[in-house]
Length: 320
Image (tube, rainbow, N blue to C red):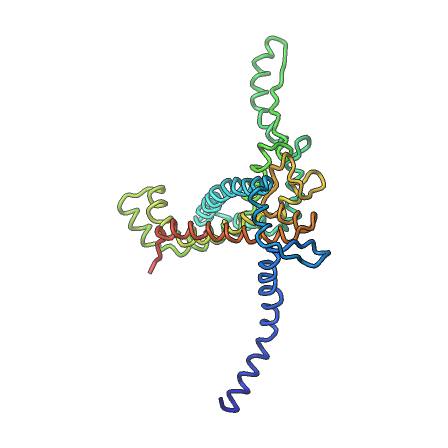
């Protein structure tokens, strides 16, 4: 190398040094360290002790581990189809030429800007079984029925009132995960924006040709919109799958009882994988066990991503 080339190489390495140091310190080292610690008995207070694959053996017999994994899969099955469909439906409506379109887009996007802790505390009150606004609204929805019934019974000189007792939501094992799913779907504004950007790239000529052929709204949706939007749908599917498998903050705040935490009440119905992983690492100080769980989660996400790629990528249509 010439003197000029060596100087350019040195200057380039100096400029890249902060990024390289950050990469090695905050990404590469934790990855390698967690892989090593997953084979150790490590409590963070004592030096790690090599135990081989014992942590992975213990995982196979941990029923709470399977419970947390099952809860995570159930939440993913609730959130991904409903959330993607809702975001696509709203994006389709916002892609039309209605009046006040900018205002509507802002309204639907704002929930995704609310910090997760603030939105979790807000939804704690919404889902309150006794004083929550959701149960109050459900009960108020029967007011027209009550007016009709009382109008009929007025001739007999008697009145009555029909009540609709909503579930306790986060206090009910049956409704706890659907409640969290509703909260996640409420914040799908980011996905909606991605779909909206994709919809604006669909060629107008395709819609015009479909209309000339007599295609209605539904046919245009299934034969024009969805095929042209398939790369965007595929992207949001993969990102949503990765995100929901790491669902933590809202579950930790809302799923551990009144004060939050990793209990996963009621009946561990909201004890999700990452919440249990956090508890093993920072509550029980089983850091080696938690590292093993982290690598199992990595393999699960990798497998699900590969499955989604093999099944969905063949149906993706790229506009050339």
